[in-house]
Image 1 (spheres, rainbow, N blue to C red):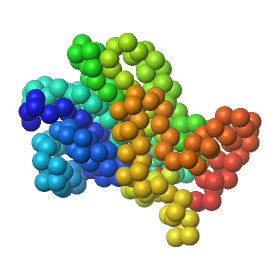
Image 2 (spheres, rainbow, N blue to C red):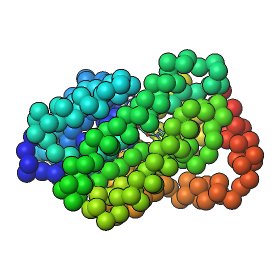
Image 3 (tube, rainbow, N blue to C red):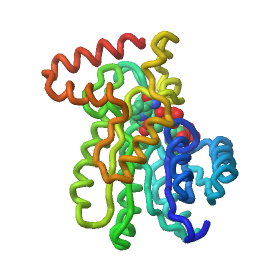
Image 4 (cartoon, helix red, strand yellow):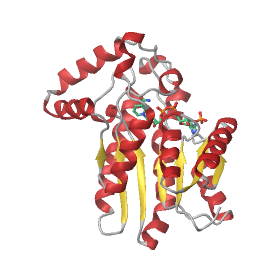
Length: 263
Ligand SMILES: NC(=O)c1ccc[n+]([C@@H]2O[C@H](COP(=O)([O-])OP(=O)(O)OC[C@H]3O[C@@H](n4cnc5c(N)ncnc54)[C@H](OP(=O)(O)O)[C@@H]3O)[C@@H](O)[C@H]2O)c1
């Protein structure tokens, strides 16, 4: 890797929204550091992006469910003398079902990946961005961040954390030259639903899902504009507004009904 290109580090870049985000940054002329567990998939994404966009790509395999993964990432960056200009905390997963019936280890790993690793990596990389007087952070939350989520209680709560943490930090960062954007996608076609063990939608309802390219482009455009919260798609934007005015018991019942339809 070279100092000739600005660098974007993207977690969860082995597929789905993360791969689409990596493509957007490669298109914008960034060199990339790609983090996820699946080395084969990461190498494939890296090979495709290097070939298509002629930007250097470093693959950094890491399991973010392990305590200290963020430290290991930063150690590798330091060893390779890579300075991160854009940090994209995208890695995450869900787990469908009643809280008490799901494996404790999986719920705790979800909090580790969706919340702890995101917070830790941000805390480790932010001081250098502030010292340089510039940098950007894109955190991937979800529409789930706006509501409590019966039948996926821990996942929705992790995303509420990402939204709240991101909004607060964006405010703290005013005047530092570092900006933070939080992306809140609605249902999107990716590996997410299979990984969370959610029943696939029937073919007649598949059009309700957004595609990863549209979601990623909205996120990157919002990041470059310095927008704090990005909700991709008009339908999702209207829904996010409606949620604010509806009484909470009604919101809980509506989410419960929507989730139960996927059992
Ligand atoms: N798809 C949706 O409907 C939707 C909606 C709103 C928000 N989101 C959010 O969007 C983000 C990306 O999800 P996606 O939809 O693109 O799903 P996806 O296709 O399942 O991608 C998830 C990514 O996270 C990585 N990841 C998962 N566990 C990891 C771990 N322990 N360590 C390192 N990396 C890990 C995966 O890589 P490996 O498996 O190779 O580790 C993969 O690259 C997530 O934060 C998700 O919550 C998704």
